[in-house]
Image: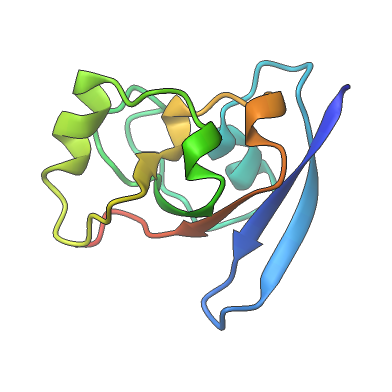
Length: 108
């Protein structure tokens, strides 16, 4: 399988579904930026800034375990949720097929 579906919950709660390639080694952050979503990605994907904070609306249980570095960064945010992740730390692969995310930004 080379493409998966990524669902993005928009600010008006509508959902946009995009086809995402799994054969390019992209992170979810890179994919969203490439599709012109408003993500700063200040640190370039190093889990140091949290400007790519997303809330996983559905499919959270399919994601890889969160790293200590990612959790430490998320823990600094005022708008963290039980299903918060950094999009830069999620690689596009079959595990993310049909996941739904809401872009939260850095919450500041």
